[in-house]
Image 1 (spheres, rainbow, N blue to C red):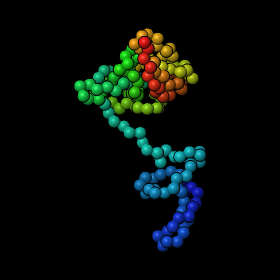
Image 2 (cartoon, rainbow, N blue to C red; image 1 turned 90 degrees about the horizontal axis):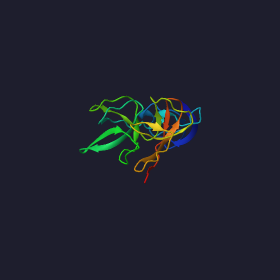
Image 3 (cartoon, rainbow, N blue to C red; image 1 turned 60 degrees about the horizontal axis):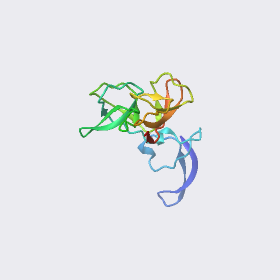
Image 4 (cartoon, rainbow, N blue to C red; image 1 turned 30 degrees about the vertical axis):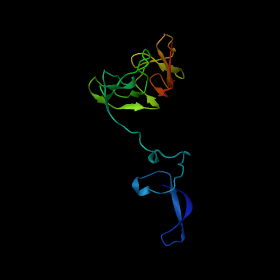
Length: 168
């Protein structure tokens, strides 16, 4: 779809009118000027896709589990994040269950973690135990405190992992 018009130097060396684009059809739209869509936003078709990759799970993971990425004999693996160990901070979450020894695709950075239950809409959540979340900040010596997001619904967490602090 065409956006606003602008002038560009054409093949003949003369100015010619051209239109910006507010959605992309792929390589054919290369080097075109971007304009905002009807919602006033850059269209999703113009943004890079989140990279996807797979990692082996070193334990059974359920949909919605927060995961920690770690070196298992020199191979990057994923396991349940857990606030009882400084080595198990939450790096991301898993959207589909993965059994131990099989591979799955963790979602890293921010996003909406689905598959949870019993969340309170609008409440802040911290890393809990066994891949879970908690509204309580851990207080035990040696545990870690990591903000992991806010509940969007009873089953969805807006995952925004924070810094990790160790309790002494």
